[in-house]
Image (tube, rainbow, N blue to C red; front, side, top):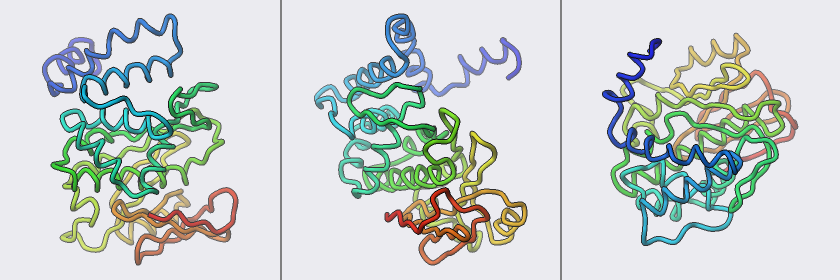
Length: 266
């Protein structure tokens, strides 16, 4: 909305109540920026949200802390389910979420509980919406596995050391379907593949594409990573990047930096 009136109308009338309440809840923390860094304020805010959502649960500590704080906040009405799903997730899923969700994107700043350095940080746009649609621990577990797969694919497109502080991965197509369909791929549309397509130096978009669309990306020399939200296994080499997702192999026009063969198991 391009005018103050229409923008205010959307903010006061069209926002979902939980989103608006959370937004207003955060306002007092902005004044803390006078005395504290951005990262300190964010960590303080997330800890307060955690205490509000799960008053009987101790604040998380250690390398997983920021992932737990952020997932509980993202899940909104199902904070306990998100926390339990994270604790029960496969080791590689936990490690990916713990590392990527602890990056600040702020030069010289790290969180106290989970200090992870290196940029760019990854923002998964519509990540909260993906979690908020989950019903129960099983769906939440699948959603966290899908979120970890998105982070891994994003890191291949935007490796540590890129000259930007943060990048955005838009996953609106993933959150728009059921978790079961997102993991398996909608069978009524035929054989499709989830592909994270680089738009520019700061953005990538997740798309569900068929072979013709993927071939077009290759012809245009567009950088992309093929992925499977349910059981990601990414393999690539030095000559041409080959991304394997279960039984599907796709040639990638530009190999990642480094060149040697690597495997990122599920």
